[in-house]
Length: 152
Image (cartoon, rainbow, N blue to C red; front, side, top):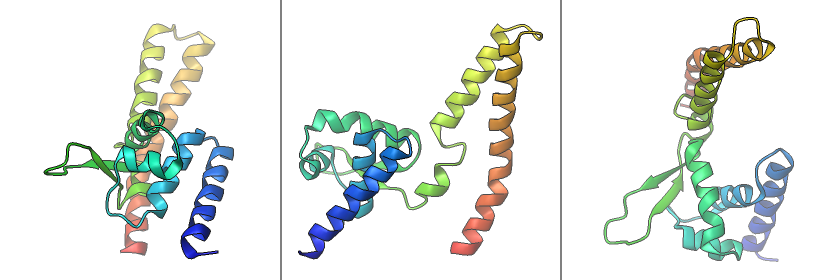
């Protein structure tokens, strides 16, 4: 068994673990491509080829990984295809305000709070949700500073 085959088996095991942890299957497999590729950037077509699926099935996964800040789109002069790569700071970004999912959760909670009365149980639950995400975003800078000091 060659090293590439061993790597791809490890990538598929990682994808399975991510799926069991709640990530959608195609997003997990797509993330595994980014983690295990030896290329600087990849296109959706290259991801699809690697996974043996259609480029269309990869599209939603790429959008999902972009929205949480794990990957980034890069300019590719001379290429008609968009190129993507795993962010250098992917794991830290996953837990920052750059994560559009966290921002969406805050906005959804705020909209729900505005639409409910103070005495409504939904208002209380939504207020707790909003407070949690605000707290999380407030605590993360110090945590990320410690992370960067440890890894930098």
